[in-house]
Length: 309
Picture 1 (tube, rainbow, N blue to C red):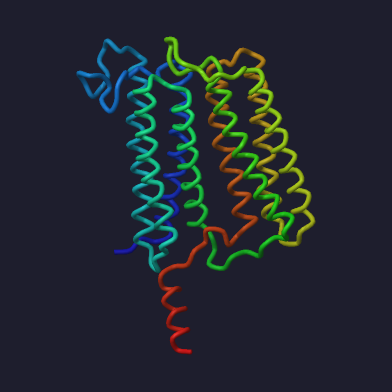
Picture 2 (picture 1 turned 90 degrees about the horizontal axis):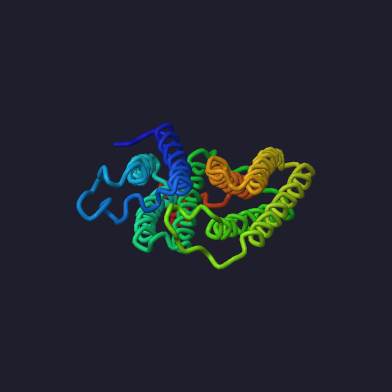
C-alpha cells in the first residue's frame, strides 16, 4: 500500500496545526488558573479519570486540554503513516515524523509531572520547551514534505550565517520568555504557587532586549538576501518574520503596560509559536540542503552505480 504526496502534505499540516493549538490550549489553562483543575495525573483526581462536579470549571478546562492531546496524536499519526507509505520511501522524512510521536509522549509526561509537582515553574518551563521541540519537528517535517526534488541554490555565506544567528537569538528569546512567565503573576492556578526567583521587571526588560536583537538580525538578513541573486525566497520569508516579530513585540509591550490581561497573554504565547516557525522557515530556505536526506531508492541507485564502477 502506498500514499501519495497529497496525503503526506495534509498529514504534516495537521500535525503542525495541532502542535500550535496545543500550545494555545496550555496558555488558556495557565491564564484561567486551571493548571491544577485536575489535581493529579494521569487521572483527573484520585476517584475519577474525568473531572467531577466538585472540580468545577477549572477541572473541565484542564481535562479538555488533556483530551486535546488526542487530536495531536491523530495528526502526528497521520504524518507518520503517510511518510512511511510514500514511494519511493524516504527514511529521513519517516524518522522526522516518528520523532514527533516521541516528543508528544515526552511532553505528556512533563505535563503530568508539572501537575504532580504542583506547577513548579521550572517543570512548567520544561513542559513548554518540549512543546517548542515538538513544534520544531512538525515544522521540519512539514517543510520536507513540500521540498522540490532538486534543491534550490544555496545562498552566500553571510546570509547562511545570519540565518543560523537568527534561529539562535529566537531560541534565546523564547527561553527567556519562559523565565518571564515563570516569574510573573500567571502561575497557572488560583492558589499560591511557587514562582521563579527573579525580578519580573528585570527579566522582562532582558526579554525585550533579546526581541530587539532578533529583529535587528532579521533586518540585516533581509538586506543581505536582497543583494544575493538566490535570495528572493529568503527575503520574502524574512520580511514575513519581521512583521510577526513586530506584532509580537507590540502585544508584549501592551500586555506588560496593562497588567498582563489574560487574553493578551494567551495571544502572546500563540505568537511565540509563529515567531519560532518563522525563524525555522528562514533557516530552511537559506539552507535548502538542511535535513533533506535521501530516499531509499536513490540510495540503492547510488550504491548500484558505485558497484558497477
